[in-house]
Image (tube, rainbow, N blue to C red; front, side):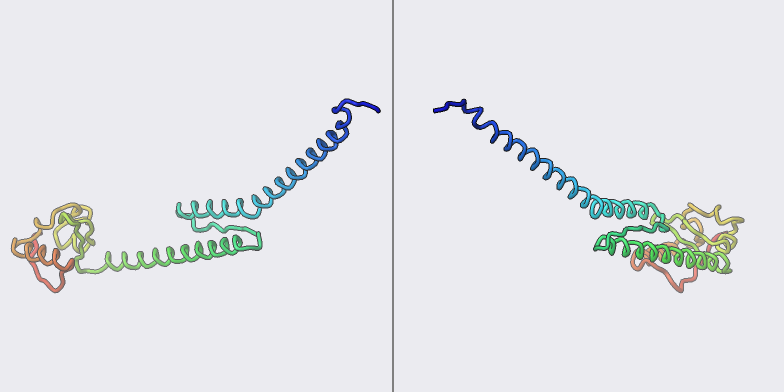
Length: 178
């Protein structure tokens, strides 16, 4: 009988097992790397781009156009995002145009118009209103308290009480000081 040490008998098996483990680890590592790249390129990067786009739009830049070509729901999301940005850009442009028309109307009418805050300070008055009150520029009226302009204190009290109840006053005639 031939007697060999156990390590020598199993050395070929051990080497084969080690090579099999090494090859398996390399194959698994390669698959993990490929899976990571697929997930990164098709999911993580596009979602990150959409997030960056949201941050840019939040800062007021509505001209951003995302280009994501994944052929899936993320591309659809980017398309919807681009449509939303275009709609916002359009709405803001219309709002600015409307605001400009309203501003021109209010500044050009011959009737006096003003707005006061909750502390009865004038926060807006058109040029005609400033002129009616005897001021050369509307800026001179800003921050002045309303009660100083009323001839009759009862008129001021009546208007103040109406405003606290209904938040507007209409069809009321009062006398104001110049």
